[in-house]
Length: 599
Image (cartoon, rainbow, N blue to C red):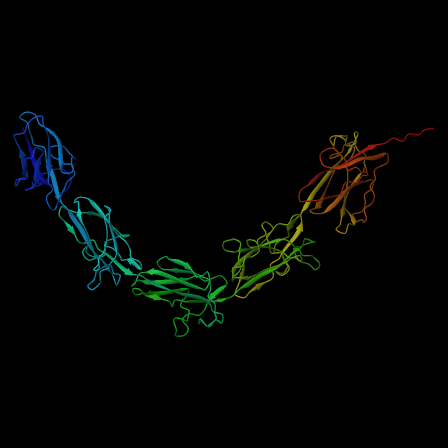
């Protein structure tokens, strides 16, 4: 029997003997019986005179400068068979000639070139720009190296046809230059530090994978309070913290406690613009006063433009000065006793009312003053006991004021006709918000007032013929009452004096609404209701005693829908204080009595 075939150059390293791929001469081939041969000019070899039934092993030597291709990737007639250079377990039959024991080889490839200092940051390796030593370069197969003193690196022994990725580390103090701006031999290739899709041919050495770096530049300096408004940063004038500074590349920072800021890692040769935000409660000082760029204020309308830095430069002359200016707004919250929308003499202020300062544009609460100090609780303060309030140390601008709700009160009419702005109420009846007030630098507006009136409260109840004396469901008796019963509303003043404020006749004899009565009172006021057989005069003080028509007496009084009594049985309800909702179970039970004469 016999065996043999071809050793060939696998030009594309795909493991298949493609059409046109040449044989490889001089490859040593050894048979396990000790026989040895070398491939001829066409890469062909064979072993004859072999014994059938014997298991043979064929070993292929790897030629210098070559590597074995991937084995067993296709059909046996076209692919490469050795695994680790060896094909085992070849058993021949009598007279058989196996011509499928092939071996493919390819020449390894390489790549490399230079990392350099792009002194002018133009993305091109210009004449005289030096190599950069010590740059870490990593290949996607795990290999790693660093550039030598001339910035050179290389990776050898690579497989053709494989897509490689090269990653360049960025040295400390440097930034990558702009990639792919010129021809491939002179420009910088990495994007985000990476060059992808590098496919090499057999034996190729690609020396165009370059990377340029430049030393970054920086700019910065100080934002300060120009206390004397002369446009110069004089000795002792403090830095201003928290000022927003924006660079034209999109970077943003704020000044520190000393007013200092900086932008680092910048590209030389680029024209930068720096924009300074105007801090609250300040206005810019005069720009470019004097001849010292390190001491003056540079922004014009908040902007410094055309700043071009050289490689490694740190420009510390971009300063900005500001002048402090504040404003104030406030006045009074009061009780409009006569409900005329005017703050008349003797009408008292109301303390403890919430007052909120609003940004007129966003309608959000203004929570801090010009110095960053909190304004009340989230922009809300409470009026003083005399009703006064004031928001001070404010940034000039447009504001509104919102006056909160007061239990038992509603706001009086807004901007009453014929009433001056110093005396009228400025708050909306609906939501308590005023119109817009524009505060200029140093302005104080003290005419923003809000008047309140008491909320009307509906009071009602029942008078009924009570046979069971209020021991079960209250209003369960006949309303066939006598005529001449009056319900009297008595107000108890803060000094505990009393006066009659309303009188209504209680319909009887099954008339419409028989046994019912109602009043309109005020919120947050103490009252009681009594029954009387006469109609007292409104305003009477003190109130008269309770009374009923002859032959009638009280069985009890009770405020509430359930059974019960206030326990006095005197024709007067218990005292009660109104809220803002109606009270409609002020109930009185009465009954007749019969005088019996005993002889």
